[in-house]
Amino acid sequence: MRIDEGSFVRCEHATALVKGEEVRAVIGDFVEGTVPEGHDKGIIESILPRTRAFVRKDPTERALPQVLAANFDRVFVAQPLSDVNVRRLERELVLAYETGAAVTVVLTKADLAESDAEVASVRDRVRALAGPDVQTVVVSADDPSSVEAVRALVPPNTTAVLIGKSGVGKSSLINMLVGHELQETTPVRDRDGKGRHTTVSREMVAIPGGGFIMDMPGVRGLGLWEADAGIGAAFADIEEAAERGTIIQYLLSDAGQIAVWLALRKHLTAGKALYFSHGFGITYKERTGIVPPADVDVILIAPKGSGTSLRRMFLEGRGLNSSFAVFQDATGHAFERVVALGIGVGSGYLFETDFKREVYSDLTGERGTLMGAIQGIFAAQYDTLRANGHTPSEAFNETVEELTQSLMPLVSENGMDWMYANCSTTAQRGALDWWKRFRDATKPVFEELYREVAAGNEAQRSIDLNSKPDYREKLDEELRQMRESEMWQTGAVVRKLRPENN
Image (tube, rainbow, N blue to C red; front, top):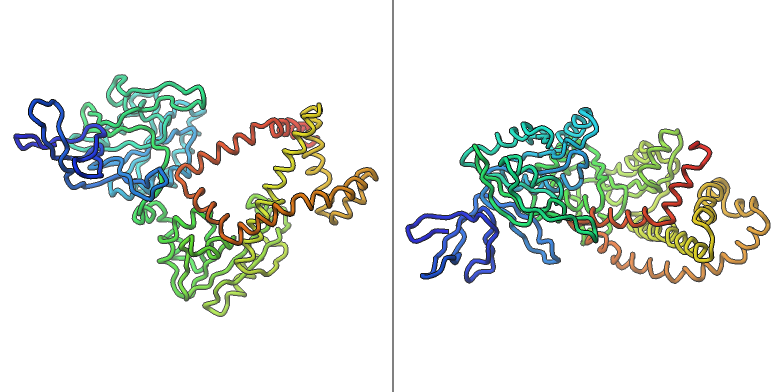
């Protein structure tokens, strides 16, 4: 702050609200203030204009920007070399580019890598993602000299900001730069195993022989806030491809399509084709903001299976059934384009639909028999068998293994009746007696599900949840809980016992 003699003081810690305002001085700000007589603490009167700011969307539900740091020359993005989170790194790079500062990726914990080849491979992969304008530095606790590459990027009279998720090695990096244990950390929490090496304060650290580094607690959520410039820089390869291409295959996730749309749209010039594999973005355009120009073809090829299955079956010389649709025919050749592309991507059979019907049926199917219902039924039957004294292996084999390894292939070959005809008479009788009861019990759930899809509620849930900055972390936790359940732990053992694995 500026004190009585007219000098200014820079914020070296996160501070309180500015007097009379709803703004907060952040680390790196230059502020003006007063020190009341008889007091040893000052009052911030105003914040001087910022040259740069690191801004994210407020991690709460509020649609507001949150400034984390100000007035710096470089952004260091820290990721652990042995466990690089590519999706998070993309988001970090977008926000870093948006600041206008120089950007460097620091790969920490290289000492945990299994080999020099792994270090080189990860470094090359990150360099390819970050682009030629971003320097990538590798730091190892076993090699104190490795930190000198970081020090060289923070010369005297410059300031850098260090960002990264908790536990990526930011504090260790700071301690290596200053030559002693400086940063306060917290121990691992018993309840969730998190918190190790977690910086508990925001502060500016003087680097011996260099400038300053702003260190802060791990930043978990990284929602984008008006990051058009950052998106353009981070996804320059996408923009270049869109500029040069005549058929733009928009194969990002639904949330990814929303994030990149503004950067892509400007390259959709007259006569091009915009290709989707899912009708979501177009059908719910009022929610996604994806409204293509009127002078481009808009087409859809939707393989009826995962990308993994599509690739596998393509390599096997088979094909995966796909639906196709034309939403907009600007050139008069959209139909020819979409059919040719459907064949080209490996479709075994093409059936016509429209964008709305595709997304309605797809969302219902994913949440129903294809994924949601089958997991629910698996869990219900497995738990019932276990509660009645059956062993984990018996419960899993009778619930999952027999279905996936024996019965479903028969259904795939010739239909449900053919599978019934090739089962024991007791299985036939039981199935025929019980299938209608299961239909009647579940049909109300499916009817409710379809209503939610048609009303756009499921789409909005997907947009809201998948766009949250901590979506990936929460998804990983949900998948971990499923993976570590007794049923699927048993499944992992049973799969190892299959003849082809022995």
